[in-house]
Image (cartoon, rainbow, N blue to C red; front, side):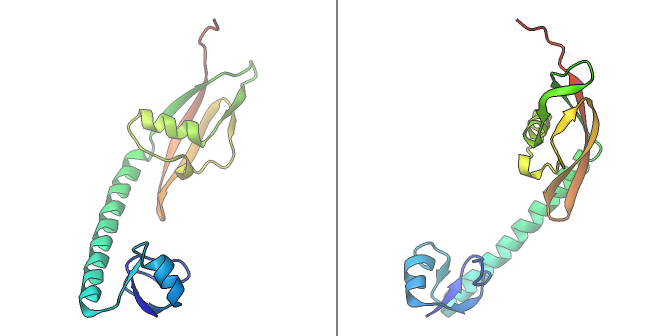
Length: 152
């Protein structure tokens, strides 16, 4: 059965492709999920327009991410953590802590976008890359300082 893909489907094709699939796969998965439709002239035209709209949206998103990356580059965040006299942390600073510190500064960054080689376990200044998208990255400074709050 031939179907017109409305979205990219891994190992099958990309949006706008007309592909041959088994009837059961089309009827039970692709069509009900809205991933594919019948390949007639009207649908071909509609999918081409959807493809153009998606391309424009992706370009706009990339421009937004480039702007965020330029604002992030060279930025500095401070994370307080309990440490001993030698500067070793009780625990560690992870991608989640860095993402939360950036969120407090107004940047919505997912922990998966923070490219920390290993958790930070000492007090110091660290350069941490932030990978917003393929080919769009920024580097920030992360200061890990001792938390001097008195214990209750």
